[in-house]
Image (cartoon, rainbow, N blue to C red; front, side):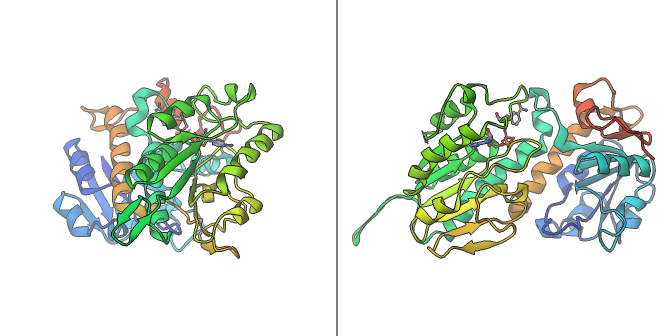
Length: 385
Ligand code: NAD
């Protein structure tokens, strides 16, 4: 079984879907591994390290993909007209492609048409058995860490209270909005740096988690928010009245904050806008806002996706794309291990090939297409053209 690893070509993408460590493990499973030249460079992995791990370093995508039965990707392969290389057309029919594959109706149809078995790892069910394969968790965790580190770097004071012979500098007030995987890591990181940390969320379970990390909870709670969590653990879309009450609580609190990190997402929707223009204007000059949700539309009214803006009142808003990609060495290592764990879990040792039982909850959750047809329950309404 030939396994191919491609260089990521989408803008702002610095990660790679396999590391020398996982390459060795795949070879141990009986695969031959081809890595496109330069695939790991933006994550600090030279071609020579893949070669030392036993991989063939292929000169381009076409050479890496020739004869491949498994393709590992971070992001969806480029299609016709999307870039210099039409990756989709180079992937052999029948190959299993794993990555964050931008699962939607149109992409599902495109994969089916190309005859690719597409495993969209972002659709992985959030059950205990799947935790070690969960790319959303591993990447959000690192994004939360990185956001706080970049906030500290952009801030013109320190996080901890600094008592010096020249006098004392007070601790920074840090407010984390959204306490899921990214937010909880942001709380922990800001606490480690010595900030005075508070956080908010709408899911009732999050309140206890915030407190257990030593941060204070600031938020609006109502009968509605008692039901704010879906069975899958995600936040629900709440009423306009709820958001208005939440905004009142946030508005008074935010005016006193030095650092705000926003991570709030509602699955399948544009990110909720939590920080209004008026709230930004109420903050002191030198304050920093990091909007991790920028790629999902942003939680902050003044975020410019992909940029850092400085407002008229001197507040910096960091709305960069791809936060996990800003810590690419670590995020590639974890993403690669998530994919390795998925494949070793569903591996036929004798056939030395993936074995994906359709009735398995994880397989059912992840597989968009199989054998040229859309099979995922959320997208299987139409057949491929
Ligand atoms: P997410 O990325 O979808 O959202 C981030 C956070 O934003 C969530 O905590 C959400 O409640 C919050 N949010 C949404 N609207 C908000 C608002 N108006 N104000 C403030 N906060 C708001 O979530 P996530 O980080 O992917 O985690 C969601 C849940 O899934 C968590 O409970 C997490 O523990 C759970 N989880 C379980 C597993 C597993 O069991 N395998 C794996 C990962 C995550």
